[in-house]
Amino acid sequence: MPKTLNLLSRSAFVLVAVILLVSLALSSTQTVQAGHRGIVLQFGAVKGVVDEGIHFKLPFVQRIITMDVRVKKVHVQANAASRDLQDVVTEIAVNYHVQPESAAYLYKVAGMDYENTIIAPALQECIKAVTAGYSAENLITKRAEVSQDMKARMQAQVESYGLVIDAFNVINFEFSPEFTAAIEAKQAAEQLALKAERDLERVRIEAEQKIVQARAEAESLKIQKQEVTSELLRLREIEATLKAIEKWDGKMPSVTSGAVPFITLPK
Image (cartoon, rainbow, N blue to C red):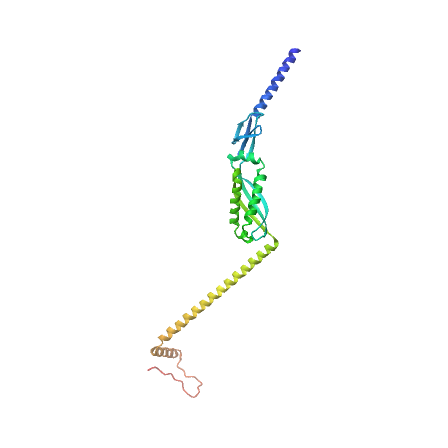
């Protein structure tokens, strides 16, 4: 009986030892997924960054926190005022990513919630600052320029943290109903003015065409008048007489006025 108990005790000890060794081996490795970086912490202090793949760590001493370094998207709205003091609600979509080599520093200064602690406040600030530099009308007509200005200002604010702005898109500007109505009225007036200008141009062109045509006709009549001579008139008379003879059937008219019609032949 004592031998049996002794054997069971040894078996239990071996089993526990195996379990501990397996647990120790598992806790000594960690996999960093594609598109991420591993931030190595040793007793809570940042010791470095590891790439994708399987990595060893000291059990109970080190741990690895993964940070996404792929392109991410943030979508925000911001209230601001234009240069002419019009209230503007700006809708923005921004694509950004973390520079892999800066992951450890970003974690040290901002932790994993860097989108709320760095990205969002910087977006609000740059939207307000850039919007204040444009009139409300220019925000609409120069949207591409406004977007570029916002992107440049945003990049300048976050690059020290190892963040890169990949794309900055102004989705929409929303103004007060009164200002929107004024813009629509102005556009309608511009369209009417443009139509009136086009109509005036059309009338001017048509008038010029008529003047040119009249001048051409006058010039043609002038040339014809210069070419008319006594010989030409005599020729036209002869042609008219010949045509009359060709049409006459040789019969005298049955009703006359007392005089016999005759045709004067040319000499």
